[in-house]
Length: 285
Image 1 (cartoon, helix red, strand yellow):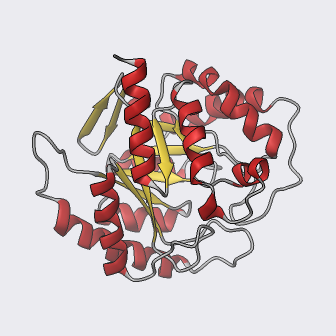
Image 2 (cartoon, one colour):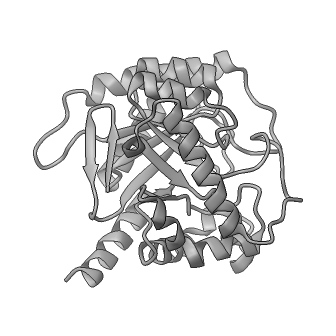
């Protein structure tokens, strides 16, 4: 399995990649948002030092109890970060440490177009790809497209959504969205799939995804598992504060590694990277 993203090619089998989270906003559910670009870049450098392979930067909180910022504000904040990132990392590649990948976290096409014009390797679209517009932007720029499953409009709570069979629904959803992206010009090798833990799903749905994740391997695309400090972890462990859920996050990483996850999106990169190294050593002596 191969992933191509703006001239970068990654091949599997290999240990899973770690995607570190940089919230370029003071409004973060996990309490680690950084509205200042200098502070956000410093956070990105620290995550890379801890073992991140990808930095996922977003300027708009996905919290459903907050109003969205304007597209102009989101685009300007992301562009400032990307411009500084380019200056820092454009020439940082070496044989032992390739340049890190940058993922742009937005679902709004106008923002995606502006941000990817400035740089970045991956568009992390949490909007469930309702049209082909973001796919066409990725096709034009060569960026990889991360397709996340959800229902309805982002930043609107969907706690009423239920499924008779969440895995069957994911199967249909990804088949449809992969076809849509390919028709828009995105090569299949430039697609990543995300089952959307906690997005328009209830506890039983999320736990079943963890349990049966390897059913998505039939698509032969890297599966990103967004495990970090999720609500379902808090529900199982009775931990209302997201920052207290790192041990549960590591448990979900172990489960994901045993079921074909290729990328983990996390806040605590050091713990995640260590977990991946241990499980890799056990599974591949």
